[in-house]
Length: 135
Image 1 (cartoon, rainbow, N blue to C red):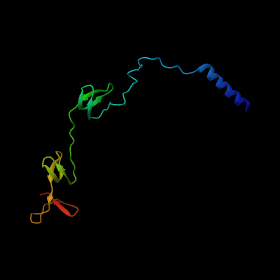
Image 2: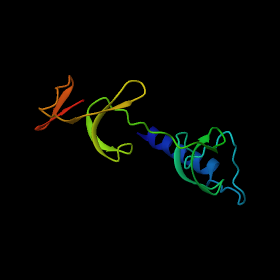
Image 3: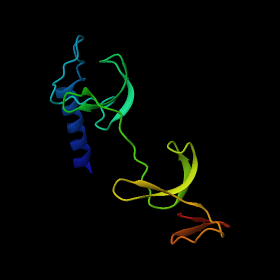
Image 4: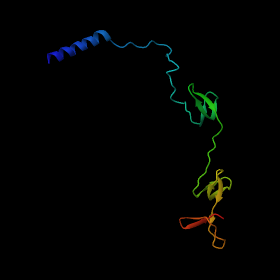
């Protein structure tokens, strides 16, 4: 037990005698190495639209690595190409339309309400109590 007490006292005396308080950094410009500093906020690789101070306006852009310079890109085109039958607004028709997309070009196939007096087509679906068919 005496040995542990004397070892603890020796370590404490060594720490106080040799280390002393930590010295403060000199005032002035912060020093940085461009290889070690990485900008965390504002440097994104994905395309987004917000204000870019370098060009002075809001634009669609991404940032190039490693220097984080903005690269202006065209507005990304979001394709609505679902294969299931859905009902939502289509700008081409100017209304909510029950439809699905087919083929590699995502052509629109419109589904109308089932009409028993029209010849029955091959493709029909039931949404709730209403039957829609591709005429």
